[in-house]
Image (cartoon, rainbow, N blue to C red; front, side, top):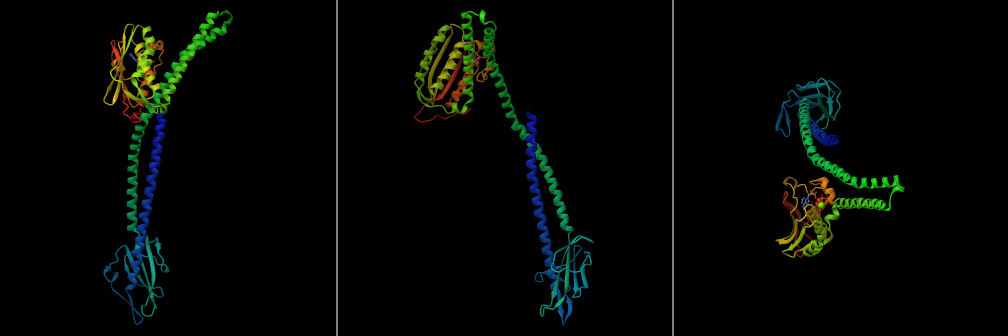
Length: 427
Ligand SMILES: Nc1ncnc2c1ncn2[C@@H]1O[C@H](COP(=O)(O)OP(=O)(O)O)[C@@H](O)[C@H]1O
Ligand SMILES: [Mg+2]
C-alpha cells in the first residue's frame, strides 16, 4: 500500500517539477531567440543606412565612397564572410557588390526584412537612395547578413539547456526519491500504530462480547431448564460485560478527543484536598488486599487544573499500585512542592516493572502480562490516559521501578502562581 503511494507521490513531484522546468526553459529559449533575431535585424537596417550614405551623386552621376562607415564616420565596416552589400541602379541593375555572402538574384522588395533560404540562410533588407539635394531617385542598396552565427549560438543554447534540464531532472528524481522516503516514514509508522491500536481495541472488546454471547446462547437454547438463580447469574455476567465495554469505549473516546483533553476546564485547586479525598476513596480497595495505603503531604500547593481529570489521573496510578502489589505491601502517596512544580509520587512495594518495559507502560494497551492484567479489571489504557492528562496540564509523568521491589510513579504539575493558564505541553 505504501509503495504504491510512494510511487504516486514521486511521479507527481517529478511531473510538477518537470513541468515547471520545461516552462522555464522554453521561456528562456524563446526570449533569447527573439532578442538575438531583433538585434540582427537592427544591425541589418543600420548597415543599409550606412551603405546608402556611401552613395553620392555628382551632376547626376553616381559616386561611391570606398568605405562604408557606421555612425558619423567613426567605424569603418568591412564586409566579410557573413555580410554583403549591393548598390543597384534605379533600373534595378547591380552595379557593385561588396562582401562574400552569396545572394539570390531576386526582384527588390523595399523596406522589408526578408529571410533568404538559398544559397545560404540570411536576412535581407533593401531601400532606395535619393539625392539629398533634389530628392531624385539615385538607385537602391541591398544588404544581407548571414543567419549562421546566430543559429550556431541558438544551437549551442539548445544543447546547453537540454543538458541542464537533464541534469536538473536527474537530481530532482534523486531528491524527490529521498524526500518521499523521508515523508512516508512517519506516515508508515503512524499507520502501523493505528493498525496495532485497532487490533488491540478489537481484542479488548472480544472477551466481554464472548461472555454475552455464551450467556444468551445458553439461556435461549434451554430456557425451561434454567433456575431463577442461573438466570440471575447470567444477567449479572452480561451486565459485567456491558460495563467493561462501556468503560473501554469511554477510555477510548477520552484518548481520541485529544482537543478536549488539551483544553481542560481549568481552575485553581488544592492538590492536597484532591489527593486526601482520593486516598480515602481507595482505602476500601487497599484494605481488601491487606495493603497499607498512606498519604503524606509536605506542602499544600495550588495548581491550575481540571478536578475531574486530575482525579482520574491519580486514581489510575493508585489502582495500579494496588493491583500490582501483593498482599501486605505498602502504597505511599507523597505530595511535595519544588520550584515551579508540584510533585506527586505514588510508590508501591509491588512486582515492579522490568527496565526495558519502563518506556512502554504509557503506550496504549501495553501490559507486562496480558493474561493477568485482564483479571485486574484494567484495560491497558490507564497510564496512557494519565500521561495525556498530565501533558494537557502542562506537566508530565515518569516512572522508576525495580523488579520485585516496587515502582514509583512521579507526576509533575506546574504550580499556580496567580496567572490564568499554565504553560501547555502538547503531546
Ligand atoms: N504500579 C505498577 N507496578 C507494576 N507494574 C505496573 C504498575 N503500574 C502499571 N504497571 C504495568 O503497566 C501496564 C499498563 O498499566 P495501565 O496502563 O494502567 O493498564 P492496566 O492497569 O489496565 O493493565 C500494566 O499492565 C502493568 O504491566
Ligand atoms: Mg491500570
